[in-house]
Amino acid sequence: MALTRQTMTDEQRKSVALEYLKAYDNGGVTSDGGSILDLFADDAQVYFPKWGLANGKEQIGKLFGDVGSRGKSIRHDYAGFNWIMTHTDLFACEGTSYGEHADGPWRAGVPEWGAGRWCDVFEVRDWLIQRCFIYLDPDYAGKDTARYPWLNT
Image (cartoon, rainbow, N blue to C red; front, side, top):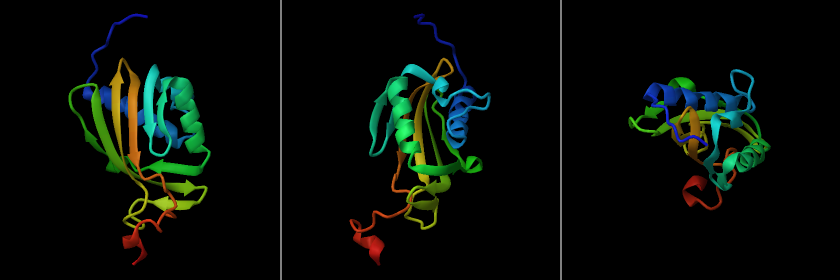
């Protein structure tokens, strides 16, 4: 294993994250027909709420399979992304999404308190995602309302 590191620009790191998000929308297939897992380092980490931390490509594949099995479709609103770049390997992207979950459809802002707003924190180095922590409400269909009295008004 070589320890060489390529210097990447913010735009190059952003392009890797964007390829990942588009592949996620495309059922895990990248723009060149490869697997979404090809975008990750062998020892990468991915966090997803209510699933936990996946370490390495095998666990990341399981996480994506588990989460993906509950969804029928997803589309990220690319034009509205806010990129928070740090001029380092670590950066964030926040945005909105819509789609259909096994429990029903969702769209960011409908209702305003519902699912669809998210923020991903990426670490990209050597053209590979080293870390992707996904922050969102996994209750896509908005059925978990009984525990939040302000939603029942």
